[in-house]
Image (cartoon, rainbow over all chains, first blue to last red; front, side, top):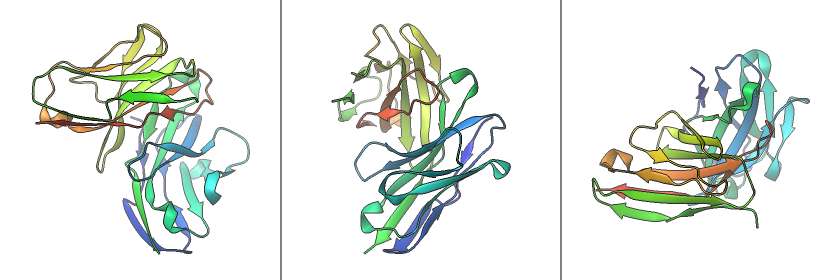
Length: 115
Length: 113
């Protein structure tokens, strides 16, 4: 079955530290890839997405992610985190073929940034 | 303003008492979906709908029902809630294109005692 794994469940960083959150998926076909962010008490918001083209995708708030097809990975990065980046981050994958609309989410990574 | 609206935001109920969580979107989206979010498990899909009168099970459909009589509405029905359905529920919608991202509602926190 298709699955999404996020390796880090809880990450604690100091402000200005660099961030990398891992995401791997198991589906072998063509996929769309997403990162969503959920700030405390809020709903999920799209951070960035990859559909095709340049595997390095830039999103909002200085985040970027790199799609490495050979590794089935879509890791999220930010060079210098801020306290306001404290949130839960979800990686998600959908199959491109057939457009079933089904989005599979990872377990989420809680990021805590210390001021 | 384009949005997905869920009601209520918070709900406390007792085992066995039927309840409905409403979801409405004003973006004319074909696709709508319900997720539940539980600590350590991320978001799991309950049901989804590709269009009016078209619904299908997600990963965790047991104990839930949905209907899609109108394009804008996609209510989630719990006929006989149980404590293991205590969770945070999100409704989402998107357009029909393969590249359409999901838009999420603000969530409904349900507690079943």
